[in-house]
Image 1: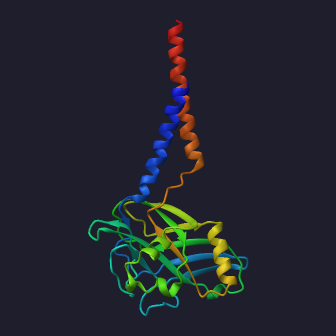
Image 2 (image 1 turned 90 degrees about the vertical axis):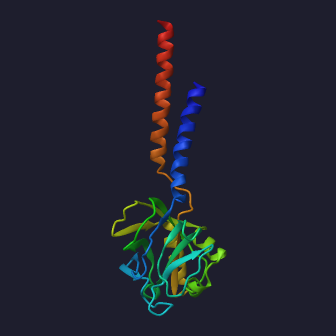
Image 3 (image 1 turned 45 degrees about the horizontal axis):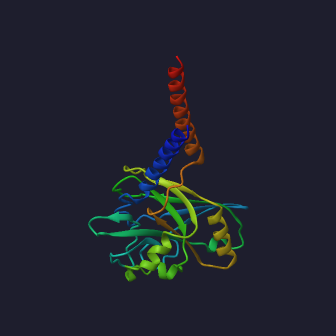
Length: 237
């Protein structure tokens, strides 16, 4: 019985590993420059929608873009490409920056990232949204690419949310951000910050639904148990 149980749990571990591997596949959001993106914010007094097009830090460019480990860029490049690309032979993380002055004096209770016109994908992958430590002005000075420190900042730290994006894109995506994002946004408002940024990466670990793992494990254990019971019954007959 111990062998069957170990086999079942090994299968579950492999299943989780397959889910994790999705995060490192290909790229998302190719050829997306020009379209602003939004942060839908719920406060105790109502709802507001913040845009990357509000108060741009670079003229004629939205407050969004990418940082890489090997590619160069320009300040007006607001494409939000993310992932790994064979042509550039390097990795990219992206970001979105929002003017939060309209939230002064407000208490935020919910946050949703709305990605618009998400372009072309190289594969299906899971997109992870993280906190950002880099200040907005530095983040939007994209001519300083490549920069490993900023690249890593966009793909590490507190995880705000995640969403699996299919190979064929929808016209937009909504990613509900968690309590960590709500708390950090409220802290930024209280501190009087002018902007709030979120970072994105494909190089995270997929967090599968606990119920999904449990169901898979129970199913595999049940099958193992039934197989053992049948063998014992056959031996007794």
